[in-house]
Figure 1: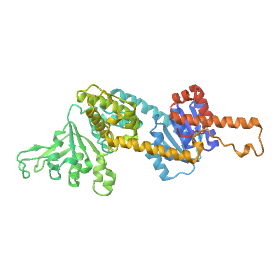
Figure 2: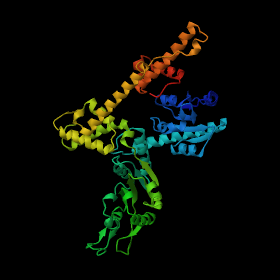
Figure 3: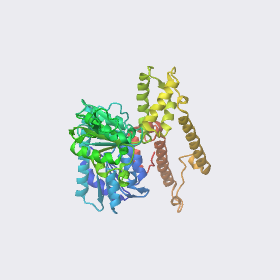
Figure 4: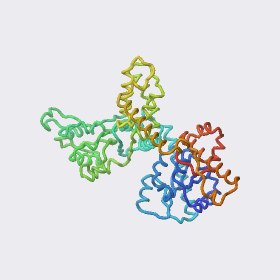
Length: 483
């Protein structure tokens, strides 16, 4: 059955929801704060989260992106006593299932939960089917953000809809375009790549549309344009934001009619192509500034895939490193090299402003500069990456020293202050012992969860307890901080 987390600081609401849901045999957990929710998130593998907005330690909408990007990517139903249009928009922008105002009826909440879980089940089935038939080629990574992008690519691959791929430089936009084409019904025809940023403005029109002989100075022969060459296949316009406005207007008509005329020509030519566009620019902002046609934007953005920066998917750095070390070594005729743990640690600590492209370049430099080495060491990496690692280490150490100077309690994570209620009036020794035992257990579990970064097996190993005992403790102490 489904795993459901209820996040609300009102005990009455929590108890009411538990009462509503118990007959349906869901696995239920509850949290009172954002920090508790984030602590339980990697533990519970939730299918659905019922999330209140106004919580003691913040606004529930603030953690929506983190919830949706977590490993289980649960569906989220927002409920609040104080609804707002802005809050509803934020919820929908982050793919919340629904936004419900309190008070709600039993029928209303149960119907929403039923529909959300049915949608999730059908989405999982569809994803499994796509994964079995979708060739992801060189797209490497298992992070939730890359998985989401792959799912979108799989969904649009078998259609002829226009696709816009956005994201920072070096995130693999052309690789995604290639993968979509390779999995499409047009895979046996060509993928015609046009780098709009590299085209001289005076030649853009003739390169795209072609020209008849004598159409302009230097046009000594008739030439087919790239739109014609894409007939039956896929036209990939990389950096489409660089297209001149005059060409945007003409290209919009081609998209509408799939027909065009060559430069200097009168004959109407048909081309049945599928369009994939890419850019690292914000086309919505450009449309507001009238530097990109809004009507063209609507046409090319039928299906949108936004690729994340590499620093948002740090868990993908290791598989990317393994993949590209093997590929680069094979390309240069070397045996595949291994690497030291510190080599990977340095890669994972770097911010990668150039994203995957910069990672590949850095790996290639390390491999070529040490061609005879069978193992890659941290000092083989480019100097700026090593300097960043050293600076970050010094900064972290300095911050830790400041904390320890301010308060000795930071050194001992289990420091416990007893409340006045135990001494005024004085409570029995038995009551004091009971309180300190419970609070110490709670602090200890919180500390071990932080050390293990939410890894259940590591937590059990450090604490010397079984997994069932850990679950029991988590259920008892629902006031843990984020690991």
